[in-house]
Length: 336
Image (cartoon, rainbow, N blue to C red):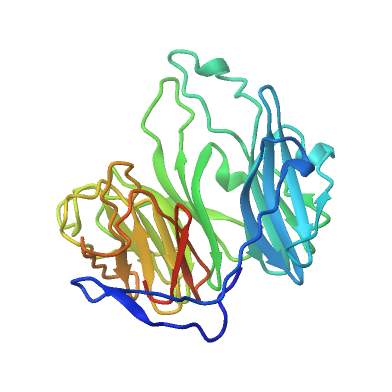
């Protein structure tokens, strides 16, 4: 669903920081599309994207003893058709991400095959993360799996988050070295201009951080990328204990953002970008979960009195509007 071009903005609630909620927002209607007809009653969607006039949704059909990838497509959002995924290219795999790339879409998943060199995570064995699989399509209907060579940068990397924008594609992951004994995984940032050729480097990059960093989500903005997560407390880092944010113009070189000096947030989990700002929030069932706001991703602020300090919120953004989903309610904003 998308907002109308001329939303009403009559504020009825204003917090101490000046933020407000409107009584009537843009005209948005939602339709529930059951996924059970495309598999079992355990089909769950993981990502959606659009190529041309086709909307594509990636999902997984999970039963007690099996899991199968599911792809469905639609031209109008109401009538859906399943795309065949019974070929060998999709065997023993689970889908995780669906991203736009030049000339089509990139589908990212992982192998369900257990590491043969470390069965059942045997004691004293550093089990490798599930192998990363990737497929590409020009129309969302016919898919071709990328070769092992093309995905070599993801060897022994567990993907944490991925994003695609006008500056290319970025992935954050944790690399497990092939050692005889388990060791702490290493933070990596991977980037690509087309989704087909990837390079990787250690993270943090050029920001003075070291161990203890965990990026939970990376998003694309109009000017590059923003990543949020849990920050370390290395000397010179500015930010709250347990939380951190980074920004990059190209997905390659990253800088640490200035964040609110509040220790009430253990780490940021979700982020979204609108036309005039970026927002982020943590996820703590006990709360509070104040919304962090930034105009550029470099400097962040927050207010405990924000009307969106709820126990659990999901964020979505497309660099135009930001949606906050909280229970049965959906809020939207251009700037957070």
